[in-house]
Amino acid sequence: MLIHQRWLAAIALATLTTAAQADTARVAAAADLRYAFAELQPLFEKAQAPHKLALVLGSSGKFMQQLENGAPFDIFFSADVALPKKLLTSGKAIAPVTTYAFGRIVLWSAKVDATRLTLKDLDKPEFRHIAIAAPDHAPYGARAKEALEHSGMWPKVQGKLVFGENIAHTAQLIDRQAAEIGIIALSLAVNTALQSKGGYTLIPADFHQPLEQSYAVTAYGQNNAAARAFAQFMRTPEARQVMTRYGFVLPGGVAQ
Image (cartoon, rainbow, N blue to C red; front, top):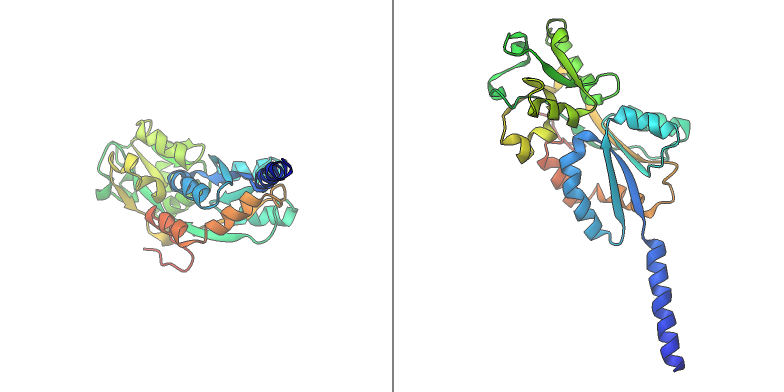
């Protein structure tokens, strides 16, 4: 009987220890990571069981504001390296700020064949509405604006622009034909859901500032084991393979 009681106590202790070590990381992630992270989440949760991820996707600039106001995110994956660095300076994130990828932007349409188009075509009369993410808080929108300015098209198309809350919402506007064409993330355009609806044209990387994307564990999440584990997981070959497949240029890679 004594042995049996000790055995039950050992099982209970092991269960409590495992539960204590299991964490759920609340992840604030840029919207361009929608499809890549949908694949990475189950891979991580299998490799790092019993840790879990709770993904929240949106605008990096909006997340920045929320984190500055104390939002309970454990790790922040931004589409702009400057934002985690600002959080680090304000004490809302802990070092290091780590670059995980460089994003690319494309011209995409669900209505016409965008593979035959360039930014110079956007002033054609058939394009009455052109969607980009809001440049004031969405890094992909800021880079879209820079590309339009670089090509001399910004003043010509400014009156046609409709703005998405983030880059995923921008793609949705084009998909639902609230805009005939627009500029979205390559990582969204290569997903089968969008790829089957229309082609894209890659916008040259030198048309805009680099979309250097970085993450940092927040001050709120500094003791969250799942957040630290996910940060490490993003450096694994398995994670890097997924990111590359979605068109991200990884640190040390070469943009086309």
